[in-house]
Length: 208
Image (cartoon, rainbow, N blue to C red; front, top):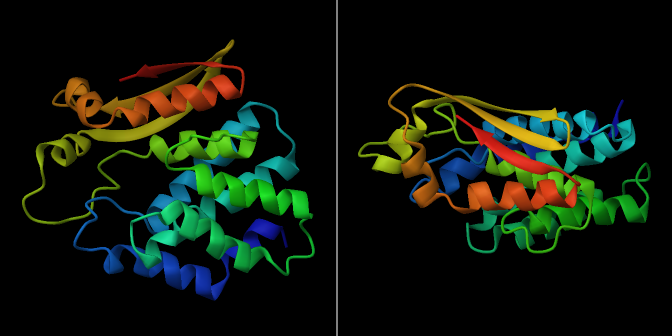
């Protein structure tokens, strides 16, 4: 069994991912649980694979992506730090990971929200994958959605490709989608992927 699959099947991790949205129902308009984790795992692995990182690095990226939002179970405030601490508990007795690999995973989780201290390809890929998860599939059903979340309903999907030395982030949208509205309320969703792409040695272009 791959190391990632062990954590993907971990009962307590799944319990947390199942519960995160319910615990934060009063403040969450978008999924931070199983669906979001699966998207971020897929895109983190995709980015690292596109950039020709080893299967081992991709594995580390998938583990970090799976665990990146588990800190939300203890509340939204400082959830990256809480998530990193909780991930460290899950990883503590893992004999198939070196101390250095555990540090890469934990540091990536702690930095995934604000991107102030990118230290690895895993952290950069996780940051990009997390920030581009904006689509109709992620919006939680609730009455009286604000205009920004209504705009997300016009995004069908997001994907990443590499052309030369440019990372292209593609949003497939309806004609009703407003990029101006998205950018006005989600500045870090454009700034942080550019910063992470630069860490990886690439430019970054958004296409919608």
